[in-house]
Length: 211
Length: 147
Image (cartoon, rainbow over all chains, first blue to last red):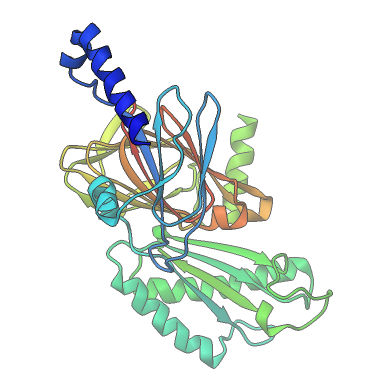
């Protein structure tokens, strides 16, 4: 081992001697490159998955926390490496600092065949409205659903009536109508799969996303 | 013309908003320093609450940062001296239409995936001049420096 090292030093010295210009030239700067990294989810901390590929071919999978790869244009992505927390802040901190607040979801349930909220969901509406008010520029999506009792057409109407009830509550709380989307899926998007004409409390719902 | 009318009718069916305009793909949530939205060819200053649309471009200045939340809950944020375009935003789960493509031309960006990726894991892609990043979830950061 030591001999091999010595041999390398001798070879290097010889090479230097025969090509002195190479020694004097500064090392070329690394070519500009992209850096891509996978981070833990900002809310749940779970680590997802990303696939980095080059238009010329070659791809790398990032599957562990702070796994990164470097890509020079016209080359394949580098083998994955792990970035230190400090490197993540240094390289990406400016973009991370502008991340919008995490969206929240609320599922509100209704009494059978009606647009009356269950008592538990009525309490959740209060929480929903408080969250909307806590955001500086909220927008809201409201999707109405029904169970399979009644016709598909009448359930589109009922889903819309339920969704509009929630929309009116959000508007009354002060949110501009223009940032609220209202959709009815009727009985087409069941939370619990049932045959037709089946009452199912979990399907009689309005799903609200607040961003 | 026919296609425009059909599209207008579809938008009318799935939302309460009226008129032939496209639905917003999301909204600007965070603006610090100089940041613009380019729709067509004219850059406009970005303000919190602004609606954003498919095909919009976003740019930040030397002191700028920008945060956007798309309607499927995807969050995108830019650091300074950055430029990104929203090339494709398809979020109609009922019709099976799901797709999100963004082009990061330069700078630094962070992404937290949303419903589109939750519903179809290969539906989100970030392109830079040097690479293509398939975001399968959830939190990915990219610094694009290749010329």
